[in-house]
Length: 286
Image (tube, rainbow, N blue to C red; front, side, top):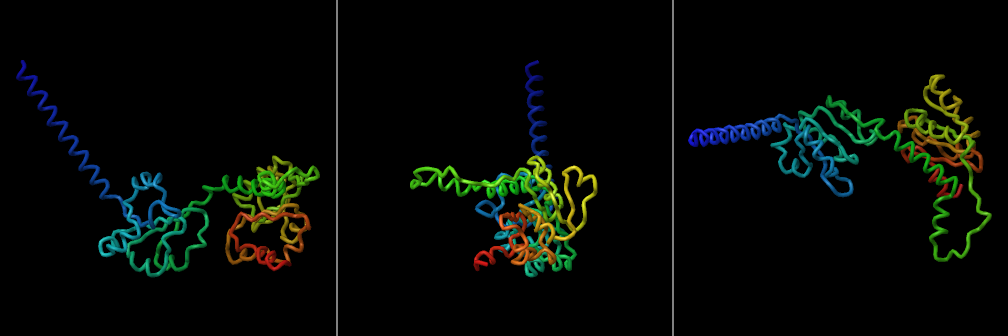
């Protein structure tokens, strides 16, 4: 009986050992089957965060740019995907020529203006982005910026923290956004998310968009459509830029547009900086 028990235990050990080996080999095989993805680098200011690497490694075998450049012959034919973080690595003709089997470029963020889409398309490569992922966060920040400006939060903070402050001016004035007129230029998913938040402040919402929203959407936020930006600029107490950067929106707001606005109006740009020339206008004191 004792001998039988010992044989049974040994048999179980052997089977367990075989199972563990199979699991290791299966895991190795699964890893080998994953497609190769080129990325810029890990960690640091603009590198891919360490906390996300485990998630990505479940889908791809990551090759970082420095390793790729040292072993081009090895990795060039293997890489099928490029994953961009903070617009890196820079996608140019030289890099594309070195990746003959590249099929798709995935870019973090909604914007793709850092990519030469025409060049990439000429190689038969597709581009994917993460549109709508940051809609709520961007809308939250838009409201934060508008409130910060209206209530002069930055100025008040400096006064409160300054060792030179002896007293606070009781006549300190700020603006209310409640029941003020908000003009949204670009009523896409982010612009509409801003309108939903602005409604809670009982703001009067007017908007301009390439395509007018449906009546149901307008009614939900009590928004009025303006077909001409100039008309919107003259009416708004706060102007919110929430459009994509393209040839039509490049330098959308300049000196002429600023002069159409109320002297007390505030403009908040949550899009690309070059949508507006207001910084150049301000710099030259015009």
